[in-house]
Amino acid sequence: MAATDSLNETLARGDIAADMSGIQWITAGDPDPRELTQYLQQRGARFITITAYELPPGQGFSLEYLWDLNGQLLGFTVHVEAGTVSSVFDICEAADWIEREIHEEFAIEFAGRIYEPLLLREGDRPGVNLHEVAP
Amino acid sequence: MSYKLPMGPYHPGLEEPYKLEMICDGETVCDAKLHIGFNFRGIEHLAETRNYVQLIALMERVCGICSFIHTLTLCQALEKLTGLEPPPRALYIRVIMAELERLHSHVLWAGIAAKLMGFKTMFMACFAYREKVMDMLQGISGNRVNYSMNRIGGVNRDIVDPTAVLNMVSDLESEIARDLVPVFTTSSTARSRCAGIGLLTREKAVSCGVVGPTARASGVPQDLRRSAPYAAYSEMQFDVPVQTEGDVRARLLVRAHELLQSCRILRQALSRLPSGDYNCGEPKLTFATGMAVSRVEAPRGEVFYSVSWKQNARNPTRVHVRTPTYVNMPAVRWMVQGARVADAPLIQASIDPCYSCTDR
Image 1 (cartoon, rainbow over the protein chains, first blue to last red):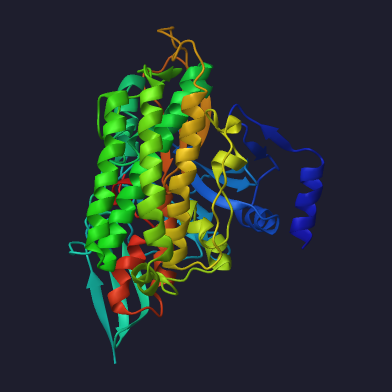
Image 2 (image 1 turned 90 degrees about the vertical axis):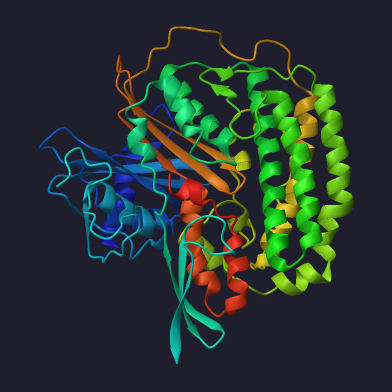
């Protein structure tokens, strides 16, 4: 609960910024996707998707988690430097397929979960679809 | 003794390739795994190699049924990046096209569902209704599948005779209300084949994040046309049909009632079509650096686009598409658990799956 309480304080301080699409971005320091996922689910938000971006060489990836709360878009961004990020699948079932897809497209590891092939055929490697340079 | 029973990727009950691997005990499905990607096309990657004109043409081909919805969602995102605002007439035409597409999609689904129920007469009747909707779409756009209607800042073609379209919609509405809806809402065939099978509870629907009629049939009253209106939906009066049973029949009823609501929206939009331009002409487009998202309530549920662009770049840096079937399909695993093997084709069809969208 401490994590959620501190998030509540952070959000109450107004660390939310809207962009041109009207998304309310939670910009709390170095966000933990699991803490924020729990927080948003407790508020009744619906998980929409994760959009992955490959940053310039050596800078890793950026993951944008997007949620819907009564028609309002909410989001937070997680920077993935070492190619690994905590999975939220065990606390947010709706994130299953998109985590698997991002794993296969960009070779990003979602720690704490196992994968079954989603798009890849036998013999393909993660990262062949959208990664700039297939690992 | 349990055994595995594969359904697909090529199966008479599935017109498109995906695989439902069922673990059965006798005639009962105990669990299932889903496999997709048999026709994965890498469209998100292709999108990064296209300029904005080519991009609209490409994304129109994500789906063969919701082709208008995909370009609408994309163009709404591109309009945020360029700052172009479509004129009111364009917003109304977008509503009209989107609702005609919903009619077309729901009637097509009703036909396929009727076939899977063993109700072939209704299958033929539904495809006759579908032809009428496709004739309307062709009359407006000149095309029957990929309409090429959307552009950044409006639409490419006007509706020159809204009264003629309105008359066609009124005729179709009468036929649907008289013949199609009663069959699905009251017939014993539909009831015996659909009631109580393919259950998805409200809790599971929320947990899986399902969208569209699949969610609304499980008592989740979400509809972007109401909660986050786009185009001219904020000016339309309509109801959002919701059922609480969560079975195949509830999904059937939600779509049947949505057919009538679509006709209601069409009547309003066609009778109040504003005068004036239907696009912004040919201005020089300047894309802002950044990311824009857009969401539209497609016939199967929420379509989500995220488009990133860098100023002065020829192509987008990233286009991410999250289609409704992509979030609805994992729920099939829970729907078939405890069902009879013979009901599995109808259960998986009840989410109105689009494999083309899923394998984008």
